[in-house]
Image 1 (spheres, helix red, strand yellow):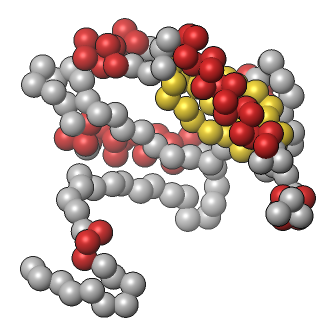
Image 2 (tube, one colour; image 1 turned 180 degrees about the horizontal axis):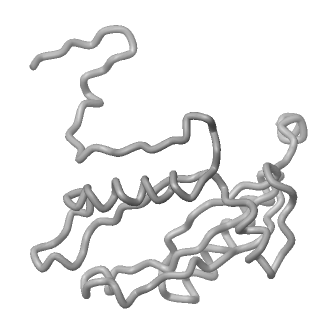
Image 3 (cartoon, one colour; image 1 turned 135 degrees about the horizontal axis):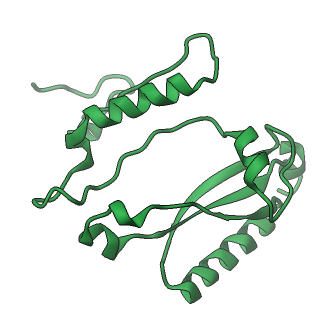
Length: 160
């Protein structure tokens, strides 16, 4: 099928993909059922994990949710989180080498401060390496989350 560029459409952005699944609560309610249904979709999209010939190692798959504030407020012990909606969370896939990882973290913290934001802390994400195949174990990153306090746009705007 030959498509031509029209309006905002640009055929150079066309590419193949395995597809996605989406589950939402149309009333905006946060429920375990919504998460469970999303996980069921992931289980049905086995090809999405791009498994190797041994069937042990894939390219990964996951689900995206809102920030689970109640959970984070309960488990974070090394620093204090602001109230819901006043912080952001980032996922980082870091090197396993601790010295390199510490340098990367320090560089990120420096950039956060230079941008006028408040760095709150890091959280190592619990993992279960025993379920991974050898290839995945050999390439497994150290997974951490970073927490940053929300700042006023006005405060950032006046920096420029």
